[in-house]
Amino acid sequence: MKYLKLILVACFLFMVDLGYSEEISKAFMYKYESGEVIYINKKDSNMRAKESFSIERIPQQERLIYKYTSHGEGSYDKYKDIVWDVTAEMEEKEGFLYPLESIRVIKDKQGHIIVTYDRRYDYNKQKIYYTMSDGQGKIIKDREFSIKGKTVDDDTLTSFLKTFVAHLNQYGYQTFYLLSSEPEIYKTNVKVIGPEVLDLPIGKINTIKLRLIPDLGNLEVMGSIIPPTFVWYTEKGPHDWLKYEGLETGILSAHIITYISKKEPTLK
Image: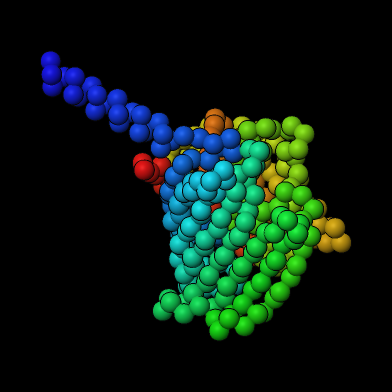
């Protein structure tokens, strides 16, 4: 009986720890998660790249900060046979995620930096600062944008959109702004396509499919040659991102499909 009690206590403590580890925030974010992603060329169905990622919640006094990191190998944008590392920080406020900074460093196979993209979000000044620099740190592009509304970039997009899936078609969850790598900012409309069952390496999953429709402004004439953008999330909360189909970085970039190939929520 004594040993049975000890086993029951151990099981209870394990379940408590599991529940704490899987605690979901108001923005539908885990305390910690990790996984792997495959990139496919839409045109020929060949694998373009693979990437591993993790997202960790880092409480800071009364703030909820999430640190995103990833490491990829393959092709990205115009760069072939390269590796990259991404670090990004996002803050959760009122059920939304707000990017603070995201940095993408692209290197050759020997580890030499080819190009660095740095995007910083200053909400006090309502400004976004974008810089693109070469391997020697020389600035190639330097842009400043005014923040017109909730804005994300391609490295923070899939986490940001979880809240939109949870509040389908509700006021305030139908548009956002996307900062591309060009760089340009596009006001983007979210359209619910409906439920769909995806067959992925992690299993068959009931999903919600969204279409992202950018406002191209003066480039509207190009709309007919730009492929549509779709994203898929699990139908039930916490609405994990599963798949993306669309342009890789910006107008005239590669048409790709990316999807989760492995998902490992990690106990802390």
